[in-house]
Length: 479
Image (cartoon, rainbow, N blue to C red):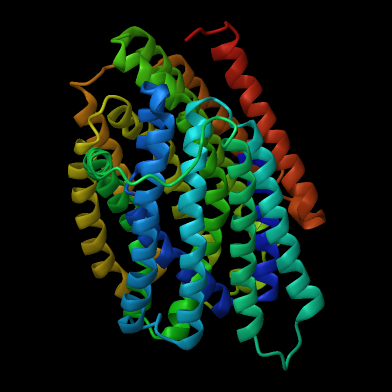
């Protein structure tokens, strides 16, 4: 529920930002968050996922695990504030006064985010995430209201308005939301165990060592998702780069809302999957992994199909026609097609990543993500000068395919599970049916964008899942 509410609120936030800020400033907004996203994953070191596993397997040591994880994250969080500002000062496209102030605000946001996810790890491991819906939703609502007040009340958009102060206030609104979210989660999580910073050097070193391989792998996985934005900033003039980043980021932001579902689902099954591996209950693990693979494939396929049909409608509803303007060499609609391909393979490959984590083979992820990151960086350097952000999208899609292939290859000696090919085949058939029916109903967008989204989006989604469920899941499956 919390992820659904967050996704819904994020769409409203995205709509306000794209209609209030210029395309260039929206590009800067995404550039800053993208830049700090790399540093935040470096500071995270995969400690969120590792903490869930450690607390699940050692519930009596919850206070010790959480306290030392929080201390480790605090140290790393402070380090990224300094490092992000230092690197940004020398990085073209990031060293303007507005960009550096924004980086500082978002780095504080990241620090609170690290503390907040530590609390969420405790709640997740104890299967008590229900309050997260309240805290996350409330924090996001505060963020939304704050940005709405900035855009429509304190600094309404005019031709003469200087956007520097409003832009920094928008960055501050995000910080306010995460601070409130963290405080609320602390009040709830403290009922599970005592929460305090602990500095057990021996244990901190232990948790650092076991999380480092996965953390580096996670960092590299973020690099091949986010390094293209930095390279766009380096290869294109500042204003052109900010426009390219905005046009590319819009579909990515829309799709990221849906990708949240994958992370939430896989994190929710991680405690059970870890226990199955720990207790050598391999058959149960196989059933859970088979079901998860089928479910995520079916979900990714319908998102891919509906995205192709509705991408222009979604862009016009969320943003405005500037993102589809023929004045640009490529538009957000072009980027959307490639981003959808990325999402499809991301949904499938994520299962293999969690096999490595649950079975304590996360060091293999480091090898895989190193290969993919090298390919991604080299590919972006080659294609960005020729195809701009479309080249970035193509390389990201290819990287995701390579990740899927390598993930499958390196998990074969850990566990082998068989998916129900009837479900896969049924999903493909119904996706094709939905696609052609969607083309037939395309004229609805000329009547109303909302009608188009509801009928072609909601209606076709319902037809797809009813069809897949009836032909594949009508017999209750047990895991």
